[in-house]
Length: 47
Image (tube, rainbow, N blue to C red):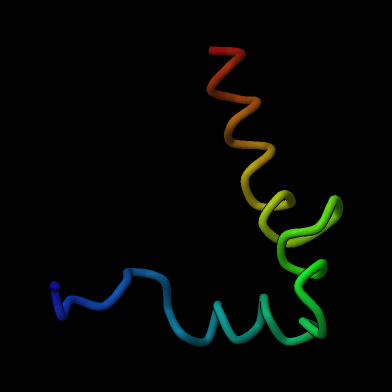
């Protein structure tokens, strides 16, 4: 396993997860994961 850390700054991750209270906040229908992945996926499909 690599010891290389991710390229996302910890401060950004902390900010994004500041209001995280339950799993649905991250992976739910209106969760952070969908919010961050939907626009780039839609752009790629339109290209």
